[in-house]
Length: 316
Image (tube, rainbow, N blue to C red):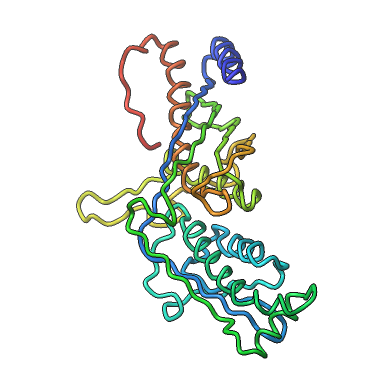
């Protein structure tokens, strides 16, 4: 908050001394509810000869980091090296009736199912381990195979959207401050700095989470500032149907100074190993950009003595 107040003062001084370049700053707090509905499956198979573990799940990797986090969850639950874990491509015969991965709920849902299948395997291996002295994972698995222990497990998680004993909905909190600069004559804007903090709980993989925050925020920026579907009023056909006239954010559109923070020392008791998904919440926080732009425009309008007139800030 101290930074925010200091920047407000600095921006007021800048706007006072500049007629055709204006700065704006805004802060947006957020509370985003993560909920579940549908069916989610995980299958785990352990290969007897080398102890490698194959995981097949209903979650689809669409650059959300699902496969990496599921491998981490499996390795941690089983207590083995992550190099022994491989996440296989999903298919409808192995994981039928798959549900959405909106706001990346498959980390929680398939992660929970993964913990269950790993726990099942560990229970089956417990009698074998008691017969051996400080055995390696590979030795336990091969001995279990020789004794006819089933090394294949499956778990299906079905959620109705109501409060469940397995997974409960939880809120994701965050806050964003953005500082922008506009050219009053051309309308061009530059995002000078963005500070974004989000509560990721006990993050399973901070590097993935930070990358997801950055991508979601920039995607939201495009929605508010440059991307717009334009249709022919007579035919209804989409006019800007290609990259030449549909403008998603590019490398020069991202914030010059982009600072992402994951809240430290928090544990989500309703998430997998204390974590929580944060893929979509930063997209909502990107609304800070049009608010900051409006703040800069208000300064320009004060110079023109029409600050009292309402103006609609749409896509531009």
